[in-house]
Length: 557
Image 1 (tube, one colour):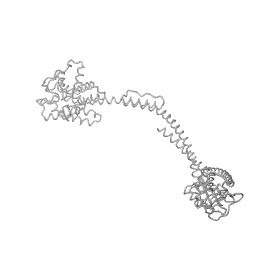
Image 2 (cartoon, one colour; image 1 turned 90 degrees about the vertical axis):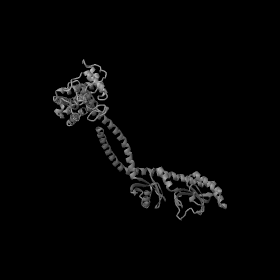
Image 3 (cartoon, helix red, strand yellow; image 1 turned 120 degrees about the vertical axis):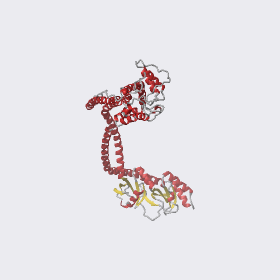
Image 4 (spheres, helix red, strand yellow; image 1 turned 45 degrees about the vertical axis):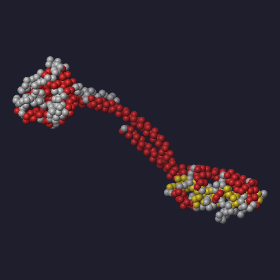
């Protein structure tokens, strides 16, 4: 991840630098691009105007020579009232010529009839010119103001039998639709200006208002501010009553150039990032795989706690091989130190148990025997090695609390009074209190504190029921009872193992855990001991059970 991030950041910095350079270059080229666009628009518009003039002349000649229209006009002049034939002829010609309006006017300048989509602007009996204005030299390029719009018109005299009978006008509306048509053709925004009035434009409202304020002083070719943005402007026609301007926003040109640059740069960025990711993954794997293999070996050793295994050298890096050698040497050193510590640890526990047993000649070796019997039961129950280690040392320490019991009570040969027995019953809690002062003995506290609990809840110190007592404490309970019954005491002789096993079976489920008793009997029976045999049938016995008070008040413990 670090390699990938580092590579990505480096590529990103390079791409940002390239983008900044391209943006600056795009800004410097924006004006040139705008001028090129206007030059192209000017050439196209010039060609369009030449074609329009030729087409207009063709239309005018066709109208002048249209005998049907001349006859219809002559009939209208000799008739009184409207002439349906004249209107039909005009409608037909307007549709055929595809003009906004086709207007027929009398020699005195009054409108006789009109046709076409914008005929409403040319009402009958109104003068063609609303206000007096001089004639126009070019009959193909004249602007006439009507109430609803301005029209670019071309006129021709209509004659019948060599006699002028009317004037006919071909009119094209100059408005936003005309500007939009020009803008589509030229691919730049177009504005149509007459005098100081913008009569058609494809600019936005803010730009159009700014253009209107500067209509009279617009340069033929240059730069102006429209809506606080620089625009290149170019007049497309050379003269005439209208001025057609093409405009190009320099800011938009810059944006367009920048957008194109970013689009091209994005492809480069995608390729660079993909290449960088692949290179980063390859480099990361080359560096990380040996470390990962080493880490897996260390995790396996840590999870299995098998420090006898040595970490194998990877061979791909001298540094890692040196680390592996150092680690193996460290583990060997720690193993030796751990072995010494464990010997000292076990020796201290055994010394505590021996010191306790030495206080009473009758209980000498009791803790060692209980520890051995407990491990025997644990193996029969298939406990793992870590549990067996806790069980072995916990059993050694199970009576450590008796250190706090006075000799007069612990070594008393006669019956114990009720108060003395209560003192004896306090030794599990006292032992747990002692072990809590030593952190590395915390795992053995449940055994020491709870090895006198019973399944029926009549044990001490807490009166736990059933499996509420931990398994290791239940195991020590059975081993402790068996050893107590099979060793002599000052107040009774030792019992045989078979008799002690019978007592364990007799009180299994009430005083002893049944599962633990079964495991003990199975393990004991497998040992080559003559006394080991199947448990006898449960019969009444006057035997004093371990840790139970006799009639005289003395416990077998």
